[in-house]
Image (tube, helix red, strand yellow):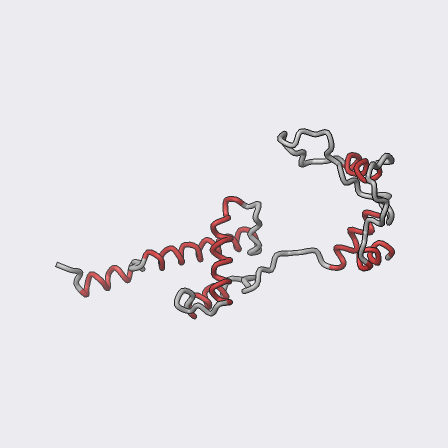
Length: 171
């Protein structure tokens, strides 16, 4: 004995999902809405391991949209995603603006790092490559890396080889 029409209607009133893939899509959609509500944005960083599956799901939706794969990304789903504040079909990660880069170069100059300062190529010579990599540096340690007087590099060429980089440093 199968489901009667009445039982089917009762299940549908409860928003019963007849398709597991459909249910999974809606679960991820709800997670994305919640992520936006909690964080105020939809930039799911690669360092956010708790939401790596959500980031991959969003990337898949964008891929399906670009490929116009309406069998897997229906117009209804497109409308749902577009209803989330800040959602876009391109990954809109917040990169640095021109002003941010200019401010960064000014800050570098203020620290005494000027054109012609050579970056040390072998900052980690003599360290065990299998030991834990240091991830936090003091300001003095960072400046010491850049301002080391005894630089063993053989080439004495200009550190910034392209005109655009040199132009930023001259500003």
